[in-house]
Image (tube, rainbow, N blue to C red; front, side, top):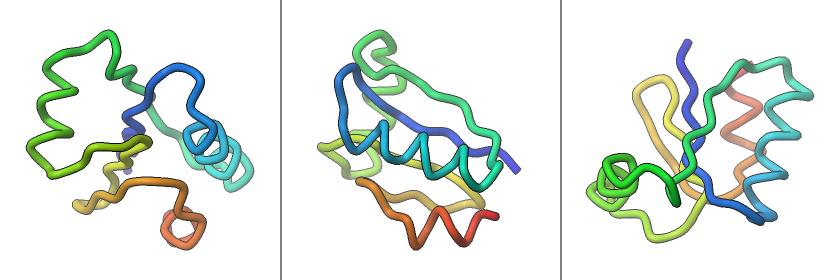
Length: 73
């Protein structure tokens, strides 16, 4: 399973998302939107304007979503 977390520096909800994924043993890749313009455009094309944005199992969501993270483990 591929889990991607689109993030930015100093993001409280991003840090909460990392902690929740770590606690459940879910492997993930972090992409910093402040350094990757292609990823930033991709997130915008999905309709999101806030971080974190998580893509996993063919779906995506924004914000800290413990319910969605629980479904990944």
